[in-house]
Image (tube, rainbow, N blue to C red):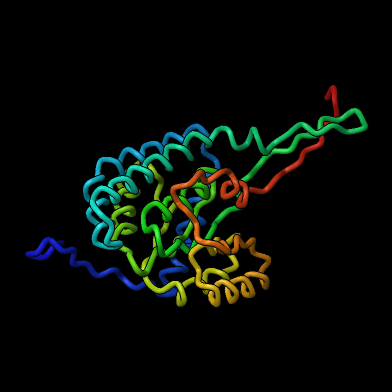
Length: 259
């Protein structure tokens, strides 16, 4: 809602560790169906999310103005960039397997084929800056490859993440694929790092001390960790494929020729 001055008045809920556990349960339940869907289908769903986000362009822009103090023009550019980012990742859905998989040469009468598989449930500490574009840029590469995720949104500017949750809930994305938590990353992230049913954690938005703590906790359960960047990220730049491949496993199969 807004005040008489047009300012946003909103209270974001403060997620607890129980909320985090419930989110992991939802993500795990959704994983089989989402990872089992065809890559083409996942791409089409993400295209649909982009369409839904674009339909609320003015609302997202207004929220970014309120959250970051940027101009309306700049906010609109960031929303457009978020839409483009979703479309870009959607286009990779049925291509990433082709560039990461391979037919391997072997000295024997066998086919040796490597293919990619999603890791499972990925926890994400979203960047505090870039409350929409940064958020999209860490979620999209995780889900386009078949993973599900639990996301700790920007504490400083949570409103765009709440609106994005509404977009996801009213798109074709199955429930539980993306689970967004608002609140303090310092309180929630360590529980996700130590959760035995979370397969990987992206610490992009974690402060240095929190990142070290979460990495130490993750080491106890052999969780894959994406460390926070050492320099500020320009979310408008070309994202590349690294975020998609970080949360993929490679399966190699041997099969006798002629059988």
